[in-house]
Amino acid sequence: MQKREIYERLQTEHSDDEYFYRCTQKEMDALDEQAEHIRGILEGRWEK
Image (cartoon, rainbow, N blue to C red):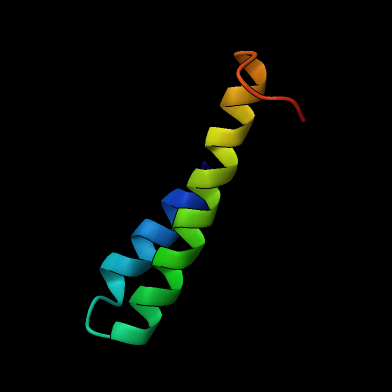
C-alpha cells in the first residue's frame, strides 16, 4: 500500500499532466486488484 500512497502523491503533484495522471492511475488500479486478490485468498474466497 506504500506504493499506492506514492502514486497518489505523484498524481497530486503532477495533476496538470494528463498522460502522467493516467499512467499512475493504471498502476494504482493494478495494485488495488492485487490487494483484493490477496484479501480474497486470505478470507478463503479464492484459491491461489
